Structures are given as C-alpha cells and as structure tokens.
Image 1 (tube, rainbow, N blue to C red):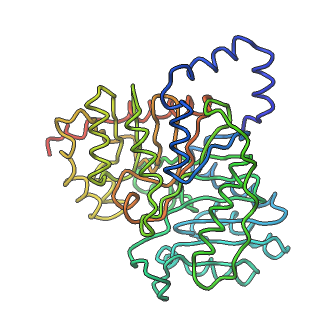
Image 2 (image 1 turned 180 degrees about the vertical axis):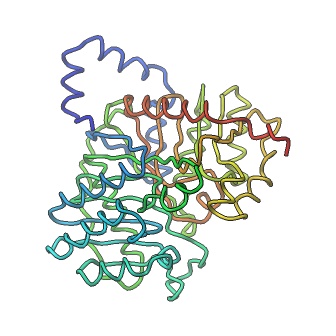
Length: 401
C-alpha cells in the first residue's frame, strides 16, 4: 500500500514529479470537472480522496490479506460473497477460523452470502452463526424475500473492517486454484484491490444498505459518510464506489462505463469472464471503436469455460464469437489459463476493479460493485498487468468458429 502522506511528501519535495503528475490532467476529458460532476449525478456516487491501494493478483495473497484484516478488526467485520467454501483449502480455512475467533471474541461479524451460492457449503455459515456471527442470505431459494426473481444473485465480493480498510474485486472467498486446477494444469488468475482510507467507509455503507434490504435480519446502522471535501479527479488516492442493482432499476456501473466509453480517446481494455454484453453496452463499445479508440475485450476460451463452469458458458462464447466482427472491437481469448478478473481500463487514466463482468448477468441481473480508481500509480500497475494478459491472448476468430 502507498500511504497518502508518502505520496504528498514526495510531490512536495519533487517539483518534477509534481509536474509529471499534473500533466495528464491538462485537457484530459476523463478528468474534466464537468464530467466528474456528471458521473456523480448519474451514478449516485462521488469521488473520495485520501486512499491508499495495493493490487492483489493472486488468490492466496488476497485470502491472506483478508485474513490479516479480520485478525486486525476491533469493532466489526463485513463480508459480502457469492460463495464461501470453508472446508476447501488451507487459505480459506484460515480465514474462516479468523472470522470464528473474532465472532467469539465479541467483534461484530456480519456476512451477506448469495442464497444459491450458500447451498454449495451450508456448514460454514452455520458454524459462523453458532460462534456469534450474523448471516444474511440474499434471495434465498428457501424463502420468498420480495419481488426479486430467484435467478438474481448477489455477485458482490468484498470484505471491510472497522470502516477503514477493505478488499474488493473479483475473487470469491475461496482459493479457486483448489481443487480444480492442480489436476488440470490450468493457471487461475484474478484481481482484487486492497484499499485503506475513506473509500473503505463507502464500501461499509454499501454493505449496510445491502444488509438492510434483506428481509429478516436486524437492521444495521450505516457509518457516517466520509467528509465531502473537494477531491480533484487526478489526485493520488482518488476513487469512487459504483454499484449495480438492475433488479431494482439501479444500473450505475452500466451508466459509468458507457459514459467512459463515450469519452475515451485512446484505448479501452476490459477483462471479464464471459462475453455476453447487453445490446446497449455492445453499441457503446462499437461507438468507441468507430471513433478510432482501440477497444480490447479479453475473455476466456470455450474449452476452459466448459471445464470450469459447464457447457452454458461455452455456448455463450460460441454464440457471441462473431458479435463484434467488422466493428473494430477486438475480442481476444486468454490462453494463459483462466482469468477471472473483472477490470476496466480507460486511456491509462482510470481503472475499475470489482465483480462486474462484460456479460448480461452483470449488466441486467445481478448485484455488483466496483471501485473506479484515478490513482496514477495504481492505474499504471493495472495497465502493465493488462498488457501481460493481452500478450498471452489470441484473436477470438483465430480458430475460425
């Protein structure tokens, strides 16, 4: 993590560094105040500064950081997850043990888990409840929660402690290298983001909102919103939390991505599991490519999709293989294993890291969250990793299917 005071001290002591940091803001349409204000209005979000970040690109490292956070918690732990395999691998067992210990010690441990996802391991939530943790099941198949269709999932993946530090991203609460990949030879890749600062309180507020929307559990009190001090979009540590709840008519991530695509001037890279965009998002991607923007969508091979997630996803890939043919949008198939990342990168200026894929489920069905980050150091790191993924990919049409 790069603490904010270190970044500020460095910029004060080095005029050259300060000039370099300021240069991208000049004339950059993604950092224009009017565009930032429009994002605020149309996505019900806001830019908050003073954050430090660390990119987590390994399942074991992410689980270890989550365990460290839980062990450091003094007041409360909020965990939102699609699935929680508490018995699957050593790293997840250690995380669950830490949650159990904190709950027994009186720390308020609250978990939102997807109702269908919980059926994969019902024992772990039960163990946590016996230890004193509180569990809420999103859209449980055993209870008629509300008007939400049963197929809607809570796909959000984040952990936040004491409203001050969090991990958010695409990784589920399990080391997904185990048990599938050791016997297959495939390499699993993922992307999470550790954040410390006011944005963690924003994530905590999101958890409370999701928790309080589930019928049954005792309502939680949201932490105070971080101070709304003016935050220039080019500042180190600047970011905003975006949330999608399309089943409630809230498509804030969709809106933000389409606005960014309309403003992009050089390059867009979007990593996601499955290729199945909604028609309006496909139109936005094609529109950016038509203006001369290099647009690259990274996805996974049909063979790996079928192996890991069943034939439906291979069907999606085959059905959509020629979706963008002739449009200028480049669809590339990752060949270095299975990339579970959900990363959206625009003009080397902003990077979005969260649970949101470039598929219909994320855009029109599931609950999703992502952190849109302006921090230049982090964006460069994300961009370098995206380049590695592009080098380890091939055109989707290369197999002639």
